[in-house]
Image 1 (cartoon, one colour):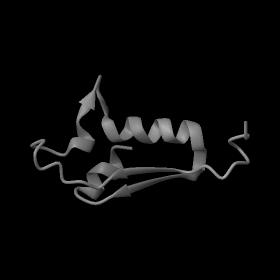
Image 2: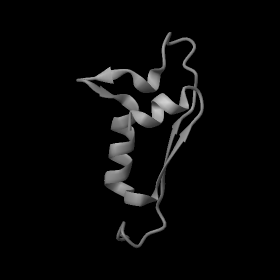
Image 3: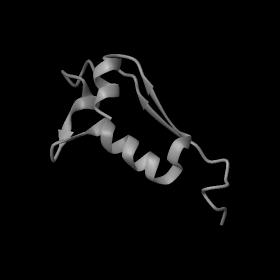
Image 4: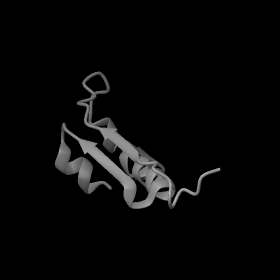
Length: 67
């Protein structure tokens, strides 16, 4: 198995949707007080470190700040 530190594995967290059917910014919805986008970025960073990229769109500032 390849060592993640030297592998070419990257993580891309896609958090750009408007979640119009959800009724609010889904990326900011919380589970146990932690925004979903924060959880996703944390897991991706745990695995890929600084090879993690967050893609935002709708409500980009609030989504970015939640990380």
